[in-house]
Length: 607
Ligand code: F6R
Image (tube, rainbow, N blue to C red; front, side, top):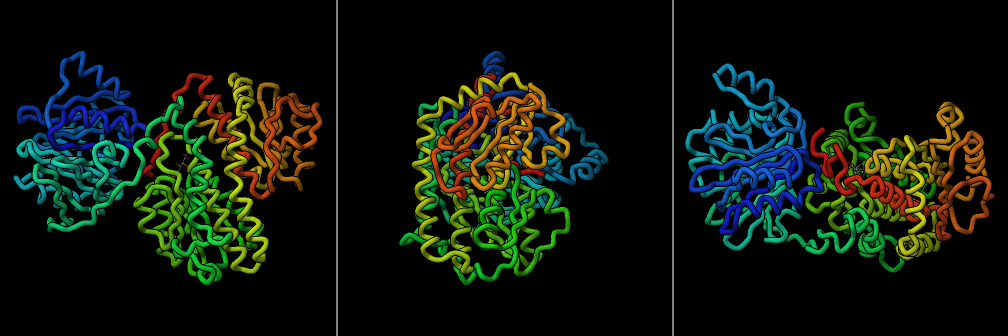
């Protein structure tokens, strides 16, 4: 999604903006631009494509602005194709803005402005906001912003400069995230912490319709009526190292390798005397005993983590769990209410559909539990109960370590729930916790012997399409393996419940459709092997992910990745690692932009 950076201070503003935007590249974008005050006038440079295109363009045209106050933007197209003219910043004359989000009533506002003689150059909803601000501008930026945002419907975070206020940067938000960084004699606005952490760790989190004014005197914040307010200054505890590649070729590879540490960081504070303890998250045995049904709502990879959770909760705690895609849940009049627990899983904590689904669940009387990675994000702030995953910043668009800790939390939660409901006794709960604590070592052992995954990836790069199959927890895991592969390798793939194949999909099998079979559940092994034989008999090349110790008929498979032996129920945490690595190496071998796959954004803050 779009990224915003703004700066006021004594440094070279263009450099700070470009540097900050580079740190937001992980969010996904297709064009970039900046607006900087140079000798009292606003100088704008923008370009379709990557930030390097913008830099090249400024160099070729000798148009790199130099100044100390400005705003910058990376755009992920929603209204209007990626192009120079649609790139931000957009100007309304006296007002220049950058915008993240979607203005839903843009058509109505545009028609009104046209009726007033205003003209437009771009296809964006953002230009409408710039023109509306300019149309309303009465010499008082705060009054103008406060009056204008009342007319906007949708989501927005705006960075704004006024031509007649060359010593100030303004910001306002509704739904889309925005922070205000406070340094020594300098201030920043940004969509996310990585953009500013090199300069300062102190920041304010702007809330709904709050307006920030950055000037030489520091930062002032106003409520939506223009009244000054005091806010708590937060401190980002992120490690600057954590947002660099640390010697790895890609963030994704680094993040795959960070998984053992991420699991330890996430589970250790929630285990006391060998038993799960989620009290600090508002979850006690008494609270847990109130629920008769659990609904998990999330998107993409986070939804797949919820699907693993469903199998585990139902197996151990014997409570029915339904899993829904947030964009479906929010529009299908869901039957949740009092007595239901709705779990929202989100790495970013800002996914628009997940946030809306959570709000809906609350309005229907359900209790909400958020499992979120990004501290202070909207979902984290609004949920009734909250478990932070401590994965640290995830930069690669394809989620790996965030998925890992999401499922680690689902295990912790399931063990505590099953124990609270008397479905497992204390000894069993302790045993499961001990096993969970051993998963980082098992994952480490895979990471130390990962060469086979490169070999498997090399065998896939010419395939047009792939099938991932599995049963039970292995099916839940197949969904994630398939998504990971398709999003970064651009090879089409589907995940299928192995037993469902012969009801239609098996007709697709040819010798150019490899099948990755995940088989880690002992009770289902024989059944999955039968399905493997069925696809093999129809010409498929079969790659099997199973335990090294499994006695597999060499004739039945073409390639195999052997996993360490571990208890069935926890195998998803182990088996996902080769699936992540296969996707990673396939993308690398195809020469793709692994960390920033085409058309994708890291944080989907629009519907
Ligand atoms: C895939 C991926 C996405 C996200 C999804 C939800 O690798 O990362 O499918 O899982 O967009 O994002 P969050 O977890 O931020 O709500």
